[in-house]
Image (spheres, rainbow, N blue to C red):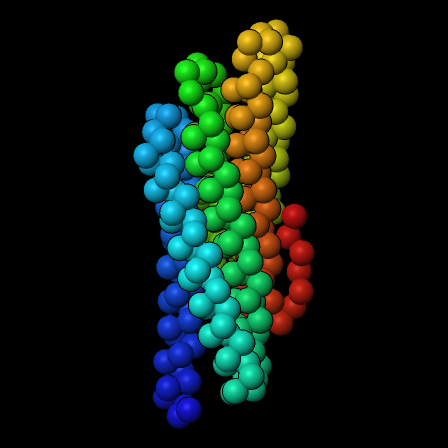
Length: 217
């Protein structure tokens, strides 16, 4: 493999990672939309999209391993490949959360939506911004943007706790809403975990740029 071909392979790998991250963001958005509108057809689209993300993740993982085995990269390229393998795992989890929300859409039927969905959508906006910025920080090498994820995650955690308590209170006061409240509790939890993965991606960004292992939480 010539140096030019090797550089091209690294660039294609980075581009593939960015596309995978963008697709995870898109699927999460569609999964929330399917839930709010009880759109089962859209939910099925999310499920299919999640499968494709997993397939693309496997392909990119194989490319990483191939480059590690055949090229024995040094310094920054080595850190890029290591972090890419780690981040692929995070993206697969984000895709899974979109899949899980899509499955919830398929399970609900005539149950009335609860008012807490508005708070969940606000939570999603925060989480969506974190995922997008974590990916941006990785691509641009913006360490300061990556380090800012911890404070944003604290806000997400606080909002998630408030939603969880509100849903518990809803179930106590109105037992007929238990099923829907339970569904929404899981959705909120998936979003809170998505924010955690954004922090992990940010941590790997710092490692890629500086070689320093920093845990953002």
